[in-house]
Every structure is written in C-alpha cells, then in structure tokens.
Amino acid sequence: VYLSRESIHLISVYKDLLAYKEYLHLGANIPIVEVLGPFFYQFQNLKKQRRIKSRILMSEKIRGRDILKKVVGSYKFLPPEFDGPINTLIYGNKIAIIVWSSLIAFVLESKEACAVYRKYFKVLWKIAKK
Image (cartoon, rainbow, N blue to C red; front, side, top):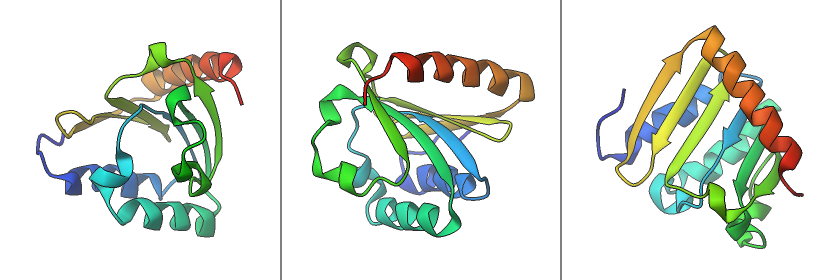
C-alpha cells in the first residue's frame, strides 16, 4: 500500500507493469500527465519498445484529446457514468487500484481476484465503444 501524496509511488506501480507482457487498465477521467509528468511519455515509449500489450477502458470525455495520440495500446470508451478518480490495473496476478484524488495506491496479489477482475473487464470491454 502506497499511502503517500507523492506521485513517485504511483510511478512505482506503473514501473511494475513493465515487467509483464500484458495488462488491462480501467481508467478514469484524470489528469494523468499532470500527476506523472514526463514519466507518462517514458512509460508509453517503454511499452512500445518492450511490445507490452495493453487494453485500456477510459472515459468518453477523453475522446478526441491530444493525449490519445501518445497512448500505446488498444483502447475503448465507457459512458461518463463510469467516471471517477480511480484507476484499476490488472496484470499478472496483481490488481493495482489508484485513487488519484488522494494519490493513494494499493496492490493486491491474488490469482483468484485477478481472474474475477479480468472477467469484469471483459464484460466492460464488450459494451465499450471504439
């Protein structure tokens, strides 16, 4: 659990993702570039270099924004009802939940929990729009 108001701890979670070949990201309408700073762009470049696959569900409110040109991976949009200050990242046997409004992150390592969250993501991916 990262209980600090420093973005460096959130960067630790994203760095952990780089050790995996794939991850799922249930996103929010949050100012990720403002929080992660230049690391956001480094992270996208590293994903590309390492051929890390990602599927990202994000807010419809982000459609058309310039930031999408920098995102490496497949993405779809969910209706605004899914908006909130929380991101969920599913990778390996881990689930990372980031509360952006307070810059708190925690990581749960559980094969069973990941299997369930992957099912949730799969359902949401089906209803999301390109």
